[in-house]
Length: 287
Image (cartoon, rainbow, N blue to C red):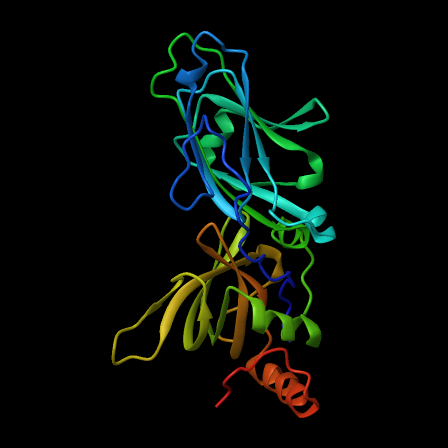
């Protein structure tokens, strides 16, 4: 097996618990859109926003005052305490600073200037709610704070950090990944591009078992191959042309991230042994 980071499978979608009457929600009921104009004359008002989905977005027009964004799963489970929130600001997001609010104590998470980079920032649910405070200005026109969010496991968050350990997936992790990953595909690595914080793998897929969103594009009606990009920590040392793999992983903000990538022959061994023992978690067509 090769040295690929082992991540937890993505979380199942959660449901928004309830909605705030002062605010407008999109049709998927996982997003919030509000306006600071409702705070006019009350710039010290703090508005509570509750979102209970595994992913969604927020857009705050003409921000004034502050909002507290409570991002929580709509389930009561010990596993919920091990979740993290990841936010990705739009590059034109401005007008506010982001803080973490834990029992009334604020810690800066992201400044107004930092939002323009559009980078993903993650924090544990245990670190507090997201406190978004408007930067005081006389003219609030053309200021919009906007970001996407996703709830992920702490382990998945840590695995995508710089310096995250690289290790082969165990047989048990391979069983879990093939049944629960956002994408499962058999293919080869054609090219590896080293970027600032990660490697980007150009892959060619010969068998596409599953993809949550269209991250792999078909070569055409008569061509049974797909191509796409998969990201992974840079220091894991992926190389092109090293044989056939089973790629498995999670989709984060529309990008594919590797979780497990055993050589296909190793996956077949693990799968066939489990099939003989009757311990497979799901069926995979290996013909």
